[in-house]
Image (cartoon, rainbow, N blue to C red; front, side, top):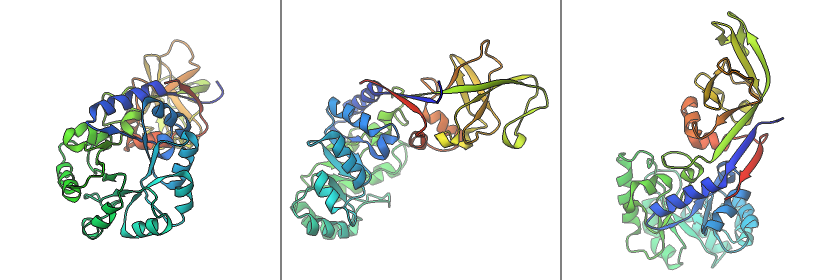
Length: 345
């Protein structure tokens, strides 16, 4: 094996989507922004469409246009950033549905694309995207008269089930949308797990279908095998890697593997990170560098050809904990140098 190899299990991904769909007392869409969280929208989106997903969510119009080329006509493609200046041509040509985030966006949309489908994104308290309550009171009747395809908001703390922000945003969303006939959507993965009160008409499975928290029952979706380039004996008092951060306390067998922060293996995870050879844990030694990592393989009887960083025993959230980040960043940082294999759905 000349390069690190990422295996993406589409059957597991689809099983996770179905499980979240079945927990939703609603239609389930699918969030495939950021190249399907780094796993390849050209493979992920058709697999989900084959499972019955008909609403997809992307971040920007350019992603939506690419997704339309992949999926063809039919599925609804919603754009979280709404109708940005200069997007009218893409929105029209790819038949995208922008989630309108402001009065300015609404004016831009109805003036440049009269009669074209749109949705509404409301700010229920996150203060990120969406029409604020005061704006919405002024715009509501005009917007509703034009039959939006979806009215949505986004939860800030859904991965913390007991957080006071969850019921606060739920109340705000209900207050802003009560009496509206258009389909409503409040919940991504975390909101789905909060229960039926948060489901409304459409849910938006995202990180959970890719195998990440807070969906603890998710099947693992990714496996990362990294080839061993060289193995050497490091004697007591000798060091490994930049900065001499690891000093061997005893004779140590060290494998140098072909991966690093250029491949999305975050440098910050180094002090705590381990890889696996079968059932044996092998600790990272010293710093993670751009292309290379030193790993302690002293416990192995035979020289390994590869070591696993992601597998069923160690998912993206474990790596995220080591790096002080979240599983989303681990997934979306996965590099372009990996050979990729997709297990069929």
